[in-house]
Amino acid sequence: MELIVVILIVAVIWWWLKNKKSSTAEVQRQASAPAAPEIKLTITSSVGSRRASSDEAAPRDVGPLTPAGQGAWVLNPMSPLPLTLLGTDESTAKRVRAALAKRQYWSQSVPELALLVAQHNLRFKEVDEFVAESRPKFEALVQQAIASSTEWPTASEKDREDLRAEFEDAALEKLGVHIGYADLPTLLEGQPSGFEDDDELLKRFSGDSALYSFFLTQLGRANSVVTVKADDWGRKSWEKLVERGLALRGKDIPVQQVLEGLRLKDLNEMLVGAAPKPLGRKAKAVEAVLALPDLQERLSRFVSLREKFQAVPPTNLDIEKLHQAFGYATAVATVVQQTYYTGVETLDVLDEKKRDPDMYDAWEIVNFQEPMPACAKPYCKKYSRLPAKRPPFHLGCDCRLEGSFKD
View (cartoon, helix red, strand yellow):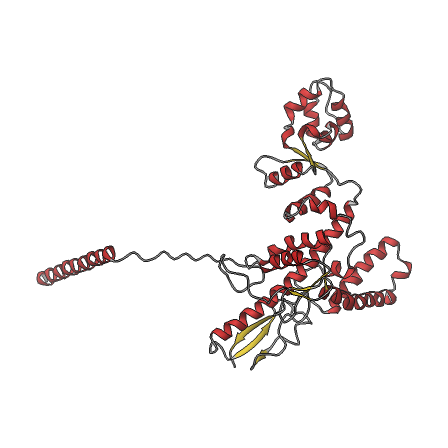
């Protein structure tokens, strides 16, 4: 028994020495070997994309910017569904194409493109054709619903508004056309009246679409004076608006409006010692604070005026119409971007097949919406050969052509 124990101990010691020697040799080998080059791989993804691309990836070749007569420009002639920009110059067409061509975060090109659409009142031939074809069908479906409704004849004006909203939702579903994330009802309404009224205002936001969206959001606030702390995410945007003369800050805001933006609790704290008891109505509290002889002193103790901002509504412009105009521009930008992107996806997969012909032996068209849109059903299946008709099949189509294998 003792002999067996000795043998086991010797075996363990031998194994340990052998592994130590191997490890030491490996360390020495790695130390003497030339350093391997550092490999950096940066990957970004995009909404709706199944392909990742490097930050340095060049825009895909979709064909040259092609004049089409009378200020029209074909942006992507190689796409299965080329897009035609109408009534503009070459410089603007290049800017639109550059916004669409960014491979990183495709959806982020929408605000930039929307600002260009709004600034230059841009139109796209394919958008006009889509609306001209779809809007009459949509209106016919709504009118059919109204005609068959037993509630409509006796409904009040407000109830009719509610009923029409229901009928419009049902009509959109019956149209059976899916256009990605674009706002289809807004698109079908067409370009709003006064779409050009904001042209001068938009020049002040050139190149900063996010700031314009931020500005419109602030114009729609119930309380016009807002408190923005130094570490607030919107502080820089507010400061930019002040620089452009589109917002007031601190002492430039009328005192009464500053007070109206405070809580009743804050106003009553300012009145401590000057009012016999807390006031229950905000309007009365504001009136009482304004009457204080030491108003400025109390205000400086309770309020940081540097944190107060107020958007300045543009003169002679209807704020509601501004929202409608930019909403329409955003709908156009979204559907155009989706169409362009789907075309790029198709061209990409065709290139993959050319680079490696034996990669797969069949094709498939897929759509990832649930339930599958009616417009996609005729196309979404497997093909033994490359289908002659490829996505995008219509404006805003988000179907995908993919390599596949025969069953």
